[in-house]
Image 1 (cartoon, rainbow, N blue to C red):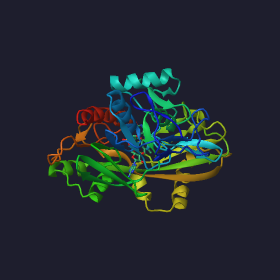
Image 2 (cartoon, rainbow, N blue to C red; image 1 turned 60 degrees about the vertical axis):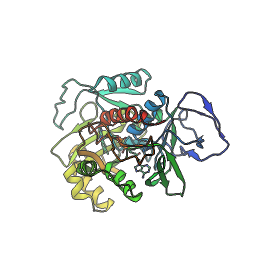
Image 3 (tube, protein in one colour; image 1 turned 90 degrees about the horizontal axis):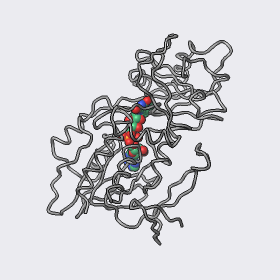
Length: 377
Ligand SMILES: Cc1cc2nc3c(=O)[nH]c(=O)nc-3n(C[C@H](O)[C@H](O)[C@H](O)COP(=O)(O)OP(=O)(O)OC[C@H]3O[C@@H](n4cnc5c(N)ncnc54)[C@H](O)[C@@H]3O)c2cc1C
């Protein structure tokens, strides 16, 4: 049994163990960060957060700073959501977000801290479109040493995160909300923050029989996401991409190709990430992995010299990769009538609220924490 740092900063122990965060042996993260950690959850949290992507994890930290206890559930075996780094044979690849930018002082300050800690580095100030010209228009694009998932792992420290918790329904109960899990467990809290892609959050409320006010439901249903099919290819030798090892081509089938070796997260193998554009992803969505791999290989050919062969390919499908129609505010706090039950709140956050990117998800998580902190007892 392990004692945890609570959000309040102290250590607490419980006799009843209800949670295991599991970082498995095949995890690509360095040993110093890799640990099997048990988190002990018995008391009702002030805020239950669904989703341990950057929005949910940021909200948990902010709530802790505001003196609230947050518990984060995620269905994945790692935290991070769309900040994902995968092992690919002897190498590794970022499969979701490839880099992030900072456009606000809040996120700039957070990123500056991660840079000071040595976790985040400036990767580029612009991309080539595949011609010999790299556009350097000045604003920094940041990446994470060892891959994007490392940032999620950092953010998952010091807050209570329960992995492999598949929430199947969120239901209104006296005094708050109940989350029902696929394994039969239930957890209650006076406030719930939903950070999955919005269609998935709405499914949880539908399963719990929660009726949102009409205008909120309508606003949430207007949010739209584009899919992205991501191909991960291991090559027989390094690919020659313009500095710093990536191309961004808005009008091509493969709108993003990046060399994970030059990015520093795949020292032992030439693994590239190739992302299909929105339209190409939609067109290929129902095809088999083999068909998609063959199609993407053809698109890659112009970037490979005669001596380079593709040793292997695999596909990561993101149904809700990036919002293409968003909710204009960083958080939606519902106006569900409280039935005289006192404090109880439900909010939506994530990259569909405010700005459709890593920074937007971060800011949304922060904003949601501040709104919800005012509601919990
Ligand atoms: C291929 C791709 C490329 C991208 N490139 C960039 C980029 O270069 N720059 C950039 O800024 N952004 C990029 N993005 C977008 C960026 O990744 C997202 O904006 C950001 O990571 C979203 O964070 P989030 O916390 O809002 O959502 P998510 O990261 O999606 O987190 C939601 C979490 O909810 C969990 N969840 C869902 N349903 C349940 C359930 N029922 N029970 C429990 N848990 C559940 C999920 O497992 C997930 O971990 C990219 C995304 C993709 C997919």
